[in-house]
Image 1: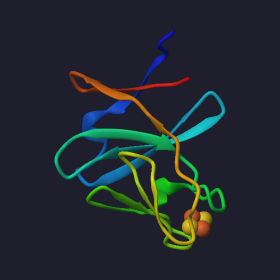
Image 2: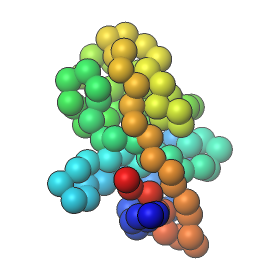
Image 3: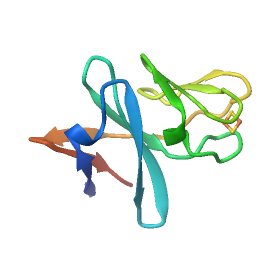
Image 4: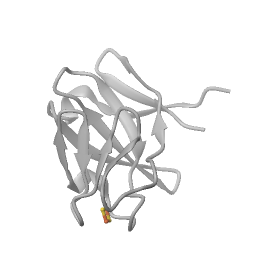
Length: 104
Ligand code: FES
């Protein structure tokens, strides 16, 4: 069954940026792309569990703040050493000014 959770307001995230969202003892990262679409992934890097919301967004890429590993935050694909395990992604939808993510 769908489990949509309100994560933030659209204006909480600048374009080409990311914020942290904690819910139910888990942590997520919510992204706004340069072309104004919203995306969500697990909040911790798959390399050493660092918060990706402290990293840098460039186009479709989130760069981890610790060792500069890279993921495509739209697909979750690991895109640059030292990360080799993909990031879990979550469906996102926008309702007015509210950004919701679907949790499993
Ligand atoms: S902790 Fe993210 S690349 Fe190492």
